[in-house]
Amino acid sequence: MKTVYFVTGNKGKVIEAKKKLSKNGIKIIQKDIGYPEIQTDNLERVADYGVKYLKEKLDHPFIIEDAGLFIDSLNGFPGVYSAYVYYTIGCRGILKLMEKKENRKAVFKSVYAYYNTKKEIFTGKCKGVISKEIKGNKGFGYDPIFISESGDKTFGQMNPEEKNRVSHRGKALDKLVYFFKKE
Amino acid sequence: MKTVYFVTGNKGKVIEAKKKLSKNGIKIIQKDIGYPEIQTDNLERVADYGVKYLKEKLDHPFIIEDAGLFIDSLNGFPGVYSAYVYYTIGCRGILKLMEKKENRKAVFKSVYAYYNTKKEIFTGKCKGVISKEIKGNKGFGYDPIFISESGDKTFGQMNPEEKNRVSHRGKALDKLVYFFKKE
Image (cartoon, rainbow over all chains, first blue to last red; front, side, top):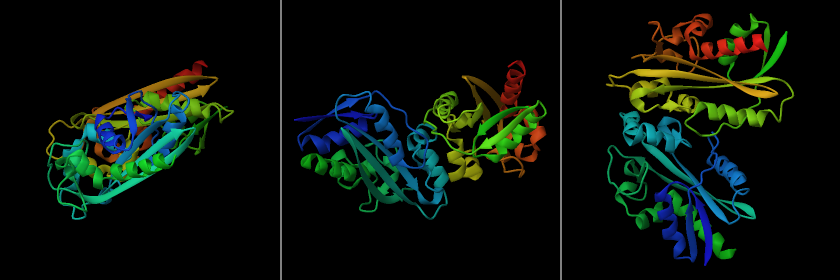
């Protein structure tokens, strides 16, 4: 069985990755060691920078992931800073900013980087809308206020399997699995 | 006359620095070359990282500055990501988040880093409150919604000399001038 480190402090992400990868013969071990994330409006650049830093520290194949919620009518906010914004103003802050906004379109984006002698990047997107209220206590982050265009439940109302089928992270993980199978 | 590069893309910061430094015999030359800013909740760490990157690229003494507006009732938001938040949701977004908030306390923080064979850090703070409306078209960023505790005008209603006397950046610049005089 192939073993891959997942460098993240986020247990929710690890659960989602394990659901997709374990049934494909890949063992995920969480490594909560941290790495510098640069300020940019581009998730790929954050991942690039992280790989450059971590490949000097780890002697094992690893993955990292960065994701963000990009809201149309807020010019892409909270975007690459989604985690920080979540821990300060949270879902309530986002709903406040969205009051009276007719355009509620948003995109969740995920970028996985895999490193094993060289770097590979896998991206996934999920289009949807920002709900009018907080719904569901599953998932994490902005899940309770995001409804994907393929459904009417928020991500916060879905279990990991359900969410993985449509989510940005699920789509990026599918590409990663496909790559692992070829490797 | 001493010449120091100011590595920044922000002309407003250059104007403020020139006002303080030129009368103290220091010539400032803006260098808009960019440097990686890491994601952290700590301005000093952003400056540290910038110096480490730039000292390999520049053969001249240089300064960089990072600043942020930390709002009490928003758990420090927008903080180190003030610039990004400004370009997405702007002053209007902040006022929206502050609707019905009784605690309007905020602190502007500035960190200057100076490098000339070794790194020096100078910090300045300015306590104040978030105004209820946008006022003034001077300054930049959140200036039109910040009222320092020593006055009743927003920073956006002050000219650079007036603002420099009380502002976070003015205070950090005073420390920098003091250091230059000793050097």
